[in-house]
Length: 192
Image (cartoon, rainbow, N blue to C red):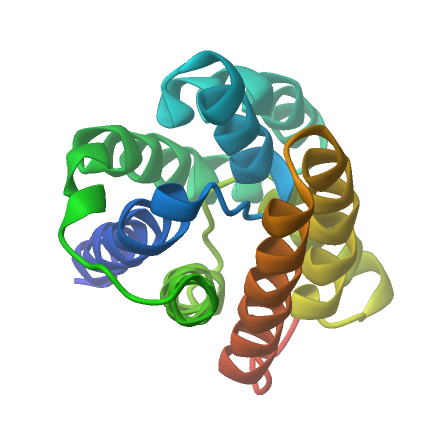
């Protein structure tokens, strides 16, 4: 029964992340941080599939997880695959919602934060830098949302300088909202 519940959490979280990206971030070339942000940068610059790039860039992280954090490897592999699948499958919904770019950045951040936070509460994630943040959080006790916020900031600064000031500004809003949402959503999760 727990496996079924966890599988449903991964699917629900992945759909929330995908909708946050495709409905609210992609139309304005806004970035998420981490591996997803790198996937978005490659999409905006070269038209590459975001989900495919996420999987490709996550391979070294999953090798480390396999060698040192087997539980996280098993708990996050399906999150990586399912979320990457939904990000690529739902990419065509970017025309459905048309709102101001700032509000779009906020709503995208909330959906992504809820999706990530939901999975993190059940000791799973989309992999990538979420997985790195979980490793560090388990060793240090630092809130996983705060760690994700730090890592994401590095990626959006890089992407913002490559793409545009608007991308940087809107991405800062998004990453702050994602970090706050994850922090609130995972606040009472006991680290093991």
